[in-house]
Length: 238
Image 1 (cartoon, rainbow, N blue to C red):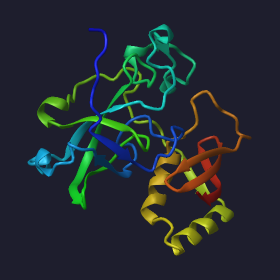
Image 2 (cartoon, one colour; image 1 turned 135 degrees about the horizontal axis):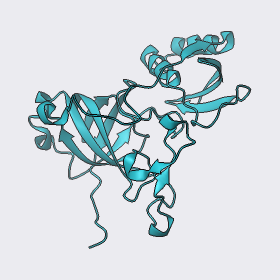
Image 3 (cartoon, rainbow, N blue to C red; image 1 turned 60 degrees about the horizontal axis):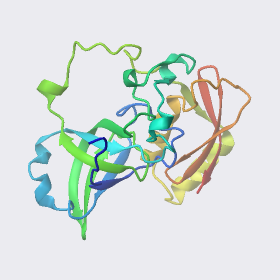
């Protein structure tokens, strides 16, 4: 047997509308999201007892990468962003999305499991999943076995340094207008600030003149970066 098939048990709904800007690890930004369970897995009985766990493991699929599963296009080495994007190491020594099996693993915080009409939703915070990501499995996080405090983490020992985020007068006015119209919430803007503070740029891009654009929730954000400061220059609703 060289390949297997796995069922999709749910679909992630998150504010991350594109890969650009998604934190490179879970729990760096406490975004609110939820999994819409698919039939026949949308049964509350399947979640009985889950409320006793604060965190969950999500097993999911990198579904938006092209040709990554083809054996003749296997990448033995990749360039991790934490190493500046200019040093290659083995793919199995990274969490790169370009790997033989397009499977991701994330720890998230459980908020609630609710039945809403015919839908069963698992509400979470801290996910690093693109909107629409297929969920393959949900497992409880077991603190005594899963938390290895003496573990060594190679080139990623510490959380990445965060940038200072500023808003231009124009962007701030648009932000206030959208809040007044209840187009979005203050909580979403706080999440956006956290995402931006992590420097969404690819590791190899250091162009201080470039204007970057990112979609987050129903917002189209433009920003520039100089040194360790990021400025939101325009903000538009999608």
